[in-house]
Image (cartoon, rainbow over all chains, first blue to last red; front, top):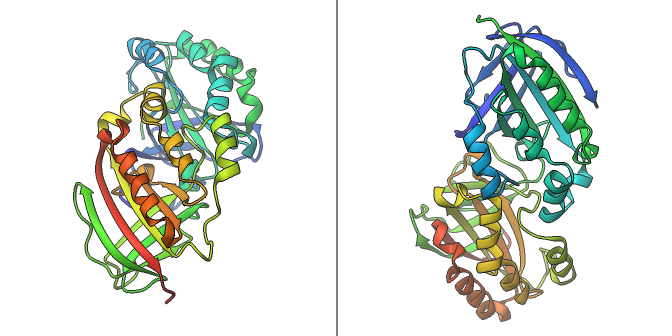
Length: 186
Length: 186
């Protein structure tokens, strides 16, 4: 299956990113791994030595409006900045109650009540991010979000995830792992 | 990959549905096949003798509001009615211009301007349908819609697809095949 826009995050013993911590926020944990490798493809089988492999695809935005995108485009930095040596991979699963909501109800929870986009905007351009969708791939999570930030913005990043976890939207999260990594080269 | 909600539509020489016609509405054609087999799984490789295999997953709704869903739930019939011996598989691809629109712009085109849901509602309960998403699977189409209807509603079904193809939303369709089948058993 030649899927464009596919990414695989492989936890194991190799990869450019050293794993500093892997905290269970809610739900089942992941097996222990020391390094994270990011592969720009949907790999069919985890490589030998991998503890886990999580896959997702970037896709069209599901909630952002034209006005919101205009604000994001101006402020959001690219991934791969030399100074952004710290990163987080946050896999999330949402409950069936979330997925049974209609589009207007999910949007209302996501932004009008939880300010997901507005909160994220306040942490730009410190934090770069890429969202990967995986629910329709049959993966164990629904989303994988990858964040990169310079170490001086570590406390700002903690505040960002705290704010999002206090929101009404987060009441629909039934699995979340918070994996922190630092870039080290292979 | 154990994907729930996955379906494969296989055009070849076997299957419960005999292919009556396979019209190119816009874009590249599909190879010729005489029968359609529907498999309730995402098959990795087309079986021997298959001319084509198209795969998709059912997923959460992307545009329907609570009020619209309430109207749909009351009127929409189940698939598999004994009298619904006629069916259509309509694979569709949308242009990059569509996918670059924001959610509010796509919703506006989909319903406020094109009345996609309102038009569909007028043909219920004659026509049963199931929508499969496939863009994020790396498939050649973005959507596969499967429709079933009794032969006495054939003209109504033609009017339904004509109406949808006249809409502003359809200006973003860059590939569409209209495959008509009749149930015959194996």
